Image 1 (cartoon, rainbow, N blue to C red):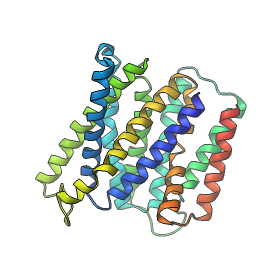
Image 2 (image 1 turned 45 degrees about the horizontal axis):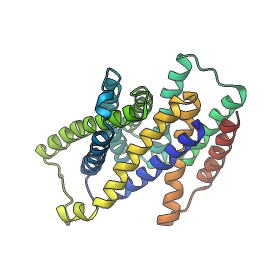
Image 3 (image 1 turned 90 degrees about the vertical axis):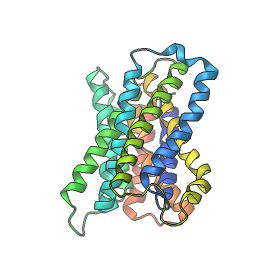
Length: 288
């Protein structure tokens, strides 16, 4: 069950990142984040009401609040790093966030077997290579590296926090709703500050019409992100966090494959090798 739900997480996060990446080409990144999360919050709010999940409120929800506060900061740091540095450097570094939940798992006493350790090493190497690391070229700004590492830590922290936010399915609905509302509060504040400083909330061409036309895609991105958080939480609760975190972090491979299938982007040799290693690491983890 852990492997199944963790791989579902990778699929959902990979597709959400791909969709979000396309949308940020047409609308400001902050707007994409806030609107997609608002749509997800509305859907989750209805689910919470229908299931009576409010009865699950408790101290664990503070983990969801923390995850909701960290998530937008990590995403915005990642977008800023992509603007400053080559994607071939930023993308692989961003995947290093998997170290956070893996370290948490080890600290709480998890001891993966030899085959699983090999799977972790192979899969992480595959994820890094699948990002197409740029080994030569112009030097990378130190700020881009620092922002990427901050984003990676944030992504990993969200994984670790959301896994602790609930112990039941209905509690998970409430935790995800609280996380979304916190996302909106943090992202909305950042959007407001950006606009006050002269930034744009709407695209220069098309304005609100572009956002309105993109609502179905924005809904998909927001709901896929919610579902990914949910499946990861289930995976981490039903098996070793070290295994769940690594398998869930294969999403860059999904994003690369989606770009190839939909946009016709050609995978570099290093990316193809990384995808193969990620698949091998998945097999080792699932069988270990």
